[in-house]
Image 1: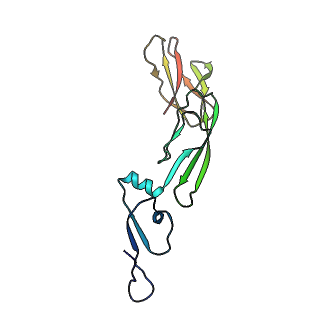
Image 2: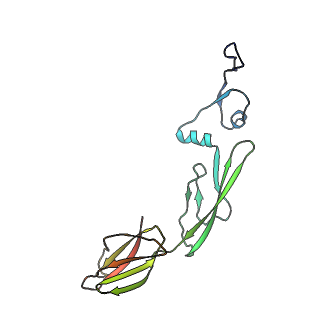
Image 3: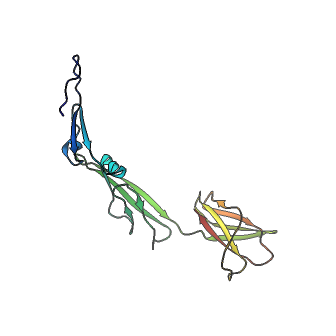
Length: 187
C-alpha cells in the first residue's frame, strides 16, 4: 500500500506498508528515506531474534582444539582436554552482520587453564592442622577426608573456604586416628 497524505495541513504521509518481505530482500537490509514499514514473517521467537539481529558469530583461526561457537546465539563452548597446565589460550570472537555493506567486529579473550587444587603445605600447631593449597581467588573450596583409603566415600568437613589469593588455608582438628584429606573446587 503506498503512503498517502494525512490531513490537509503540512506534509504528513502515512507509511507505505510492504507485506511478504523476506529478510534477505534489499528493502529489509537498507535504510529507506520516508515512512516505510516492512512486514517480515517469522516461525517463533528464536527465528524473530535471528532476523532482527541479523548477525553470525564465529571463531577466528587459532582457537583451541575443540572450541566452538553457536553461529546464531554466540554461545561459546570449550572443554579444555589435553591442554598444558597452566596455559593461556587466546580466542578471537568474530561477529558479522548481513547488512549492506557487510560489517564485522572481533574481540580477543584469553582463557587461563589452571590445574586442580594441590595441597602445598601441612602444618600442625597444638591440636590443629593447617592445610594450605593452590587456589584461584574467588573460588569456593571444600576439604573432604577419609579415615581409611579403603572407605568408599569421602566425608565433607564443615565450612567451605572462599580463596582470597593464590592459596587458601583450612584449619582442621583431626580425630584420634590418621586421616587422609583432599581439596575440591565447588561450583
